[in-house]
Image 1: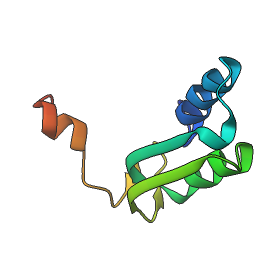
Image 2: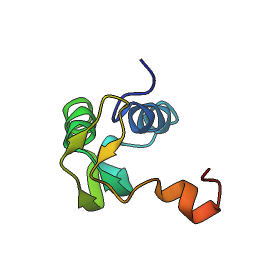
Image 3: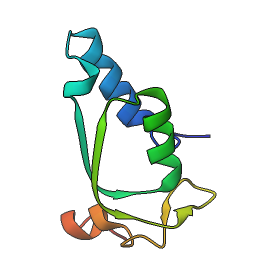
Amino acid sequence: MGNTAGNSANQAIELLIQKGVPESYIIFLNLISAPEGIHCVSKRFPAVKIVTSEIDVALNDEYRVIPGLGEFGDRYFGTDD
């Protein structure tokens, strides 16, 4: 199934908490979000602040944000096919 929305963020936040960072001190900053990811993170860590520049419509079957900016990372780093 792959990495669903929010799981990478949840793992990173969990590690910070395990290392002693209070949940209320954590700010999750990202470029593009899907509603599913925001809900996943905020449900598990309600005290974490989420800052994003864009909330897109949803995720597709491959867990990619739609409509999104396309494959932003591939375009930015020149790794697209």
